[in-house]
Length: 478
Image 1 (cartoon, rainbow, N blue to C red):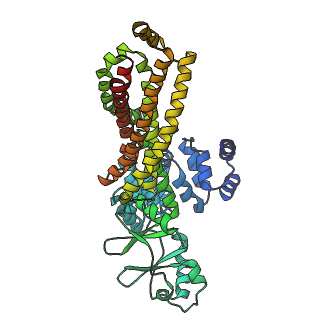
Image 2 (image 1 turned 30 degrees about the vertical axis):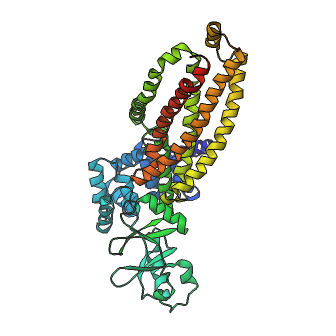
Image 3 (image 1 turned 90 degrees about the vertical axis):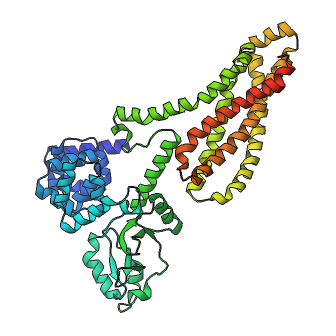
């Protein structure tokens, strides 16, 4: 893939260098705009970009402009004449214009809005006023709507006249005289209907739509649930104000997944690609979470400090604390990931919490049994061959007597028992926190990863040292 991009980039730059307008137009006629934009994503010379726009046809320029990075778009706008900017903007969709100017300086925004035709400017301003990450902020206002009294013949004629300016022609949105959405008609329905049929007689009345203030993630779920390619966005009076298409939903899903991955990894979401994100910005995205988790780890520090005398007396206890904490954190993290995923896909709801807990309890018991048996055997092996230093055991035997193998077995049993309890508790915590997050209306991906790890660390350490002080330690004469 990277090799193809490199070859394409060289081809484009060669065509520009030799001022081969014919060759450049051939590239745009045979290669998708997105591939061209990605190939020259690191080209920041506005003169080179400007030459492309002045050579390729208007049928490509607006879409190509929408695929450029925000830095490239800003650079091109700065060198565009007012006429060139107006031509590009006039051929662009309102939602693409909004995506372009949202993060740009005020002077650029003002110039772009000034270049918009009056109707388009009104659509852009309306989209800018909607709350971020809602249906209104991602919808487009270029769609085909018709009155329910229109005939099939009139509808097809309308599509032929206005279809090129619409985001999609495959779904036609039907309204009544008061502009209330009453149904949808698929292009295929029009093709196979009689010319004198009226839309109200052939339209789907069980259509799916969303409110303009609906969260974009919920919109994406509706597309998946109802297998949609386009959906109407309506206001509180059920009047259509825009549509969302499947390409918008793909972008939404990518954005939501990126946010969830970032949150699960305890970093804030990155709006820009990694290589285009400044180093300082990367630092600022990671440092706050790292510092916050360091503060949360104070509980683990307090526990270790509280059992400092036990560790001093029998140093081998400290050797296995990282193993126990890591195993618990990994197990809890696995559970959290599965539950967050299932909640996000609506595989179950808050009512199913009891079922989830019972299932996870059984899973945890089996996993805990397997892990503890393996851990016992593995730790015996580690201590026997010297991977783990056992000098503290030998020192204790020299003082109190006792059997070396019995001491090793008791230590291995201590760790194995702790791991069994930790597996169960960590999975219970891991499956419960996402439900709690949903209950208090927080994003489970934001809080569950770091909180699960911290809670499990604390619980596993408490379990480890309680088993030592109350059961294993006394049997070894401590």
